[in-house]
Amino acid sequence: MIQIFVDADACPVKDEVYRVAKRHGLKVHVVANSRMGIPRDPLFDLVVVSGRFDAADDWIVEQMTEWDITITSDIPLADRCLKKGARVLDPKGRVFATDSIGDALANRELSAFLRDMGEMGGGPKPYTPQDRSRFLNTFENQIQALLKAQRGKPGGDGPA
Image (tube, rainbow, N blue to C red):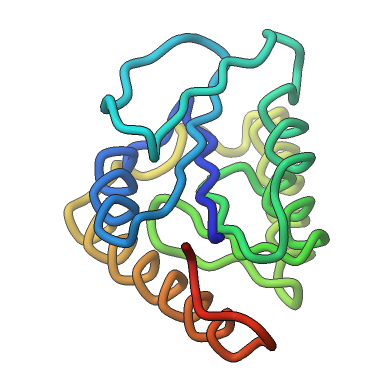
C-alpha cells in the first residue's frame, strides 16, 4: 500500500495532502517535533518525535519504502528518501530526483555559506497560490504513477 510521509513542522500543504490522500484511500503519516492538529480519520496519524536533531527525518527514512511518497522541503531528507527508492516532492511541487539531488545539495551548501558570509539574506520566497496548484498537480501525478506501477507488478492490483 502506498503511504504518504509528511515532514510536517513547516509544511504549508498538509490540508491538501489530507484531501488527496483521502480521495485515494492512502495512509498519511504526519511527522513532527510537537503536537499539532490533524483530521480525525483512521487514514491519518500524527507521529511526534523527540526534539533530537533529525529525529523526524530518521523516523521517516526508517519507515518508508520505494512505494511511498515523502513531502518535504528538507533537501538532505529528500536525498535519504531517494536512496531508499521513494518518491519525494517539496510543497511547491518540485520533484526531487536522483540525477539532480546532488546539485540541490550543493546549492543548499552554497546558499548557507553565502548567508554565513553576509552575502545573501532573507529566506525562501513566499508561498503562492501557483505553488499550491503546482503541488496538487505534481502530487496527483506521483500517486497515479505509483498506482500504475503497482498494478503492473506481479500480483499487484494497487492499494487495498
